[in-house]
Image (cartoon, rainbow, N blue to C red):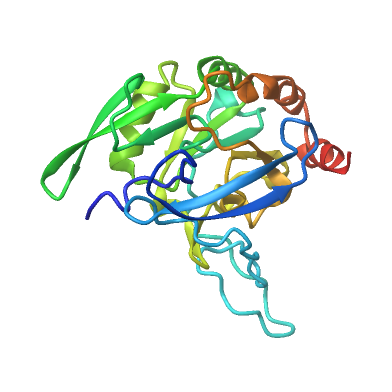
Length: 265
């Protein structure tokens, strides 16, 4: 294994290795979310988001294997034998669940040295230790602390655990993440690692996903609060700007009503 498959990110437009890019416009409910989103991949670095126009599966996506269409009058597909998340704890029993992405949502990481890196994480690849330089997005500490008070928070990244787990250890000093899910928990669908929210073991009308990549939530776009990809803009305020929205969502028994009304604006 080499560094082509450790971290799942979109590429930084400022990096020299960019070889291709695509743009997509996602219409969102507030001004901070109504932006063009640049998507691209590094040839030697990134592997996961090949097609941002990917369509959701035509079949029922409640199971991980995406089965063929059921015959007429056949019984409905069974739920997965084991969900990705454990039972809800007593402290989180009445809270909605927020699924939070890592790369380009909370942090930006690179194998290239970054002079102002917040963390330097050693990652072993084929017997050789490589240094990963990690920048924290502005206001990420306040964002995580607040969401940890209001929600059952789950880290869900398409990166490998050998990189993402130590980054989460350094990032989450307050124990905000009740669980951590990595690439093996994703569904590989048409060249993309998709986070299938139906596999979590939570009521979908109580689940929100925060992610910079539309491909990650293509199965459940109605549950998404998209964020702009972040690389190194230290004046960025998007996480801070989202806090009022999440304070409102924390009080809802059905998040769809709020998210749908926001998309309709």
